[in-house]
View 1: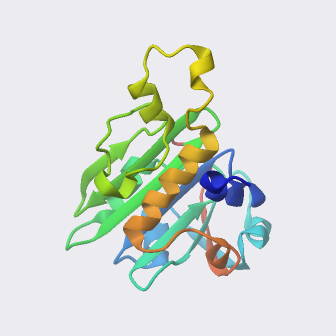
View 2: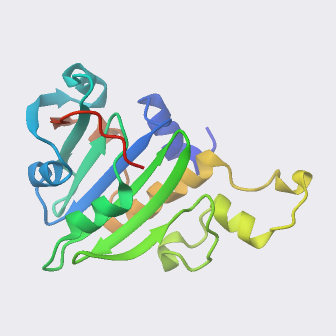
View 3: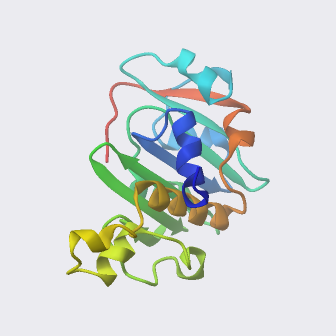
Length: 206
């Protein structure tokens, strides 16, 4: 496994790479965060992501939610797609609350969003947008395809071999999220007992 794709490889082990949505929120309980994202029913506690699938009832969307740090909660969508930017704004609320969200789906839609006090502060389509100062030092030195495209708009195909790929770009986005919340996503959280919630009906929002 290449070092700069390690978080993408981690998600792949859990079957989460084709479609992925995660929203971290500061000052919001996992239950409140799940309900703010549309959850209607608590369906139990799963001993890790791999066990959570037993709680899925089609055509509903399954959320896996729990405390992530002392201050931050994480809600992971296991099927369907969360509207990343809207979710970050909704969960950031007021009173110094913050939220950061990362997501993508089979058709693309890669996004990294950060909001504070209900206001969107950063919103980055990191596979297309190469603005160099996105997320400032938090994204400094990390490989993103969008930056390679921006820096080399007229590149020939053979010049693209060294550009950041999907695994690198997705890993970089998750690293930025980890830097914001103070902890990277890893097996310690994915394998731990977390609550499961269902969003009624089919909920596909990119």
